Amino acid sequence: MFKDESKLNKYLLTIFLILATTCMFFILIAYIIAFIPYVKINEWDLLAFIGSMVVAVITILGIRVPLLNQKKEQLIVKYENELKQLHRVNNNDMRYILKVESEKILDIETDEVDRHSTLQLHADYLNDYINSLNGFIPSLIESLDWDFYQKFEEKYSSLGGFSFYYDGLEINYLTTQRFGLLEEKINNYLKIAVELQTLLLDYQKIVHQKYDEIKNKPVFFKL
Image 1 (cartoon, helix red, strand yellow):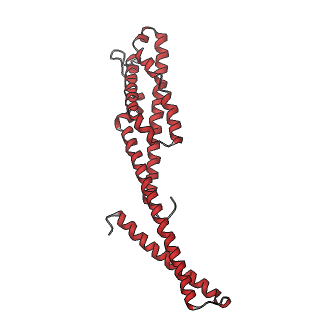
Image 2 (cartoon, rainbow, N blue to C red):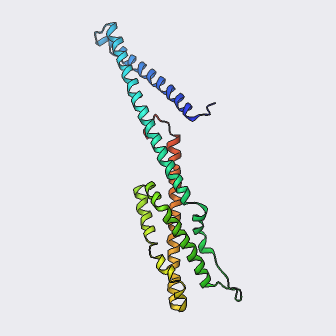
Image 3 (spheres, rainbow, N blue to C red):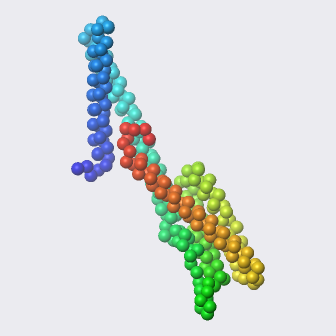
């Protein structure tokens, strides 16, 4: 019946105002009838009192509802902007970092995992992930709330030393001891990246839930 959600909201708002005013009117009448025996009041005073109370109620509702509606629209825009940014960060390419650890390269001759080639593969994926994330950072941090930003910053800053090991990847192939240390470091950075991407995905779900709650919540109630 109502294809436009804004029209439906206006229709519901009108009904609410009418019902609220009617209820207040009858409540006032009931109180007045109850106290009439104890108060000397003429007909005109009674009408003036009822009229002033009804006007006061309508005025309060007329001020409160638009303010709540304005706040609701501001929150909707805020969450929409956050969701747009998070959707860009959580695209398929970025989410692939969650699967990288399971990617293995086998040695053709032995059919065993080629640790050097596998590590290079993981490091390349991780390097691409960090570079892509760096490109999102300026606009992303503007849309994060403080609590999440602190968690995000802790994980993100932990990836800062990866470039040192990535740049020395081929050099450290020279000795088994160095390679073992390098493999451990790269895998640790990969785990941090997975935790960071998981954190972003979870945050997107939370923001989406808040967006749905605000969008579907009647404007008559406090936001």
